[in-house]
Amino acid sequence: MADNVTSLFRSTAAHSPSMAALTRESDGAGPVDFCIPCNPYFPTPAMFEEMAARLRDIVTYYPSSADTITAELCSLLQLPPQCVAMGNGSTELITWIDHLLVRESLAVPVPTFGRWTDQPMETGKRVDMFPLQESSGFALDLAQYAEFIRARGTRVAVICNPNNPDGGFLHKHAVVQFMDAMADLDLVVIDESFLEFADAENEPSVVQEAMLRPNVIVLRSLGKNFGLHGIRFGYLVANPALAGRVRSMLPKWNLNSFAEHVVFMLKEHGAEYAQSLHQVRRDRMDMSGQLSSLPGLTVYPSQGNFLFVRLPVGAEGTVVRDRLLTEHRILVRECGNKIGSSSRFLRLVVRPQVDVRRLVTGLEQVLYGTSRRGAAVPGQASGTAYSSGTAAVDRLVS
Image 1 (cartoon, helix red, strand yellow):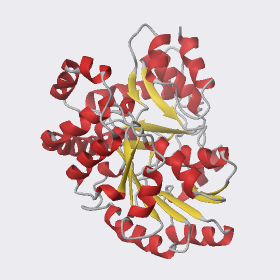
Image 2 (cartoon, rainbow, N blue to C red):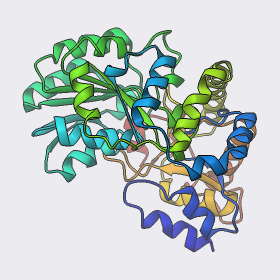
Image 3 (cartoon, rainbow, N blue to C red):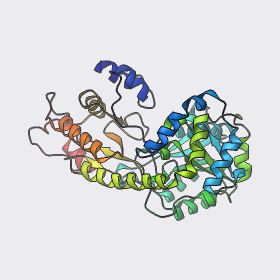
Image 4 (cartoon, rainbow, N blue to C red):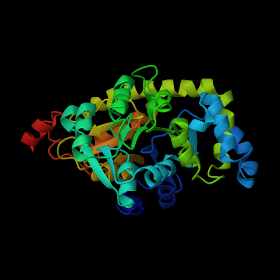
């Protein structure tokens, strides 16, 4: 059974296996999920009970048109509907952005969300990848990125803020300056899919600024913020011409009835949603502290609802991932198949403290040899020196 479960990772090109696939290959109970970046506190149990009570009607009947659902969302967000297009998940919107607005080339810092590299390559575009440096904590230097874009002659630029998988954050004023410096490009995309989890500044979004510019799109997620990846809904904001161009290509019923039901529930549950974000931010700080106490494990600063960690010298991410799953029923995202990353890195989703304690215990046993299968890090169990936490010294130690 364990071999069947871990083999699912080797047959998946870009992402971890779905929770449904893992559950089918196990005894019917899914693992503790540190892989899929959901909000664990929203919707509330009462909201799930309400949806369950209406399940028959939700899945039986057609949803309203996308225009109706978009109008309700815009009323909640205080955005003009003509500046918004809702999609069946952010990947649908990324696909249409690529088909409609990316003519020849796209620049993106890496590592990042895989569809920003894979989608344009699948349609024959040139993807100029700007490597984020481990030595600087994967922070994006916007001035260097701008120079890279000019040197390459790229026509479309993408920024993910916070970035996935490292959670790196850019302040609003810096993003606006970058948008203005790139005013001559065909398009600038600011992917704010995880921005709701940031607390580095009070109003970090550039949505209002994007609506005033002719070549800027802001992409935002609902599934990630609301903890509902399975519903598949997200939206983009741009000036009316850009938003309308994308919206005109979307099917009339591209949003499902679950998405409609959730959007129309939100006006009654704003307080619970705000509290869920506050709790995730508190959990992120606590989880970072607990993981940082593990010898040799490097935890990078994050403003997302996940943490990017580097394993100690000698630890192989796929081995750690498989053993956490089979020995401890914990699912993590090993990042060896992310461009710009390697198998020494894991992305760990922020979860409640009870789950984090289970994760830390599992990592201790797998990494340092307190389980029957021994240590995943050579020499750790016998007391030799741990990783310093810096790439330069690690190379010397290796």
